[in-house]
Length: 188
Image 1 (cartoon, rainbow, N blue to C red):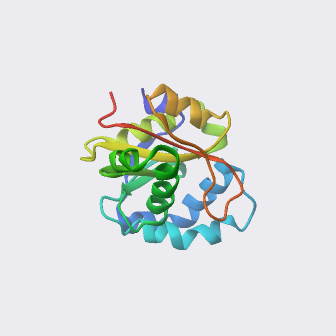
Image 2 (image 1 turned 90 degrees about the vertical axis):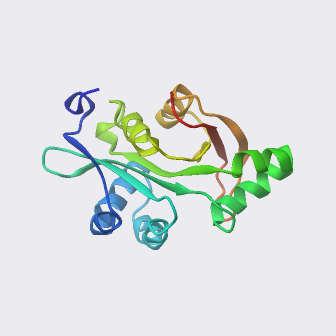
């Protein structure tokens, strides 16, 4: 896929310093893509900064001709003690048993965030970001959580072979139902 057909001019892997420098813009993209209320960005900023310090953290960003963020994807190696890991382990153990939890959570890359500006969605940017993000990731699996219900994100994950790991899960502090999806790496 060419950059111009997908709605962006260039793609780059961001260092931690570059990510921190673009954090306000990245959070603005996140709020727009997720249609979240104003103020959400300020709540997420400390968490995103902490994520950038985790083992295996990677970030891929797409930019338009004016060097504005069009899309962003990041993730890192999941491990015991991380909030998301512990939440998913609890739900997966209760629903499918300890063996399933150990299998999925034993060696995985967590796709933590992937967002594309609404006006640029549906052009392959998300898929390109995801593929670039996990290219050469050494983990056996990739896992992610996404709100339940039909969306472009769901279609992307299904097209790329993500399967149900845990469905209708409620994370502590969030009333929405989420699906945990996963698949083996590398992507085909």
